Image (cartoon, rainbow, N blue to C red):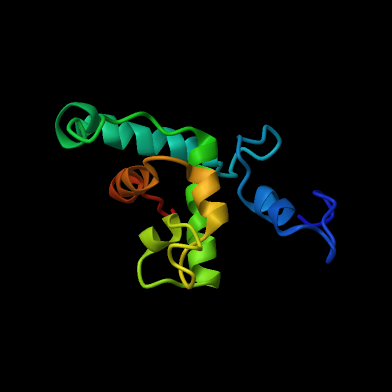
Length: 130
């Protein structure tokens, strides 16, 4: 895999992540899973659970996730593993508000209503190894 994707010890971590978990399905690797497929499954779970009508209607409704949003949430959990906070939602605060657990990069990446989006993501995102 490293030679096929031209990865070396000097490659950026994002290049490794894209090789192992690509954003879109690779045509030459039909068995490889993609974030796009995880996004479809997550949105389908939310729609079947009536997330837009019943569950999250009072909080502004459910808007289907994009593959980039799912990618960002996966990156958030990788950050949580590398730099743990008591609660992931603490990462959505600016560093001047919470100098220990706050993260300006996370705030700029997710923007407004990030905690609501994270709550919906936690509720409906599932993956399973076959």
